[in-house]
Figure 1 (tube, rainbow, N blue to C red):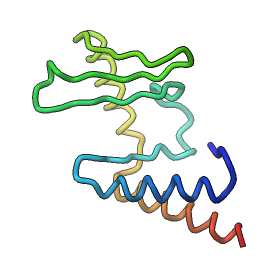
Figure 2 (cartoon, one colour):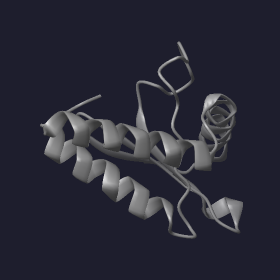
Figure 3 (cartoon, rainbow, N blue to C red):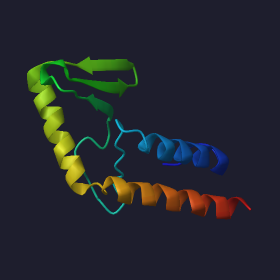
Length: 110
């Protein structure tokens, strides 16, 4: 989705590309061709580490942020993330996609 003008979107895309170079960050793009996927209406982050019992999910809602810690809920979100990864582009394909969109925006801004 596009929010703001082309300059704002380019800055956001550049920031994503920069973040994707960090060793602890993986960015995966779900292409528009995918009609539906689990969690598409949610804005969430799965924070996972070496000790699964310390994992958490951060869900951003209209009325605030919710943190999910229970094993049953974590199981649901972990499975959802596996399903999203199955339809998402690979990390390199995602970077290529983001770069391509950024180049298209630069061409339109002239």
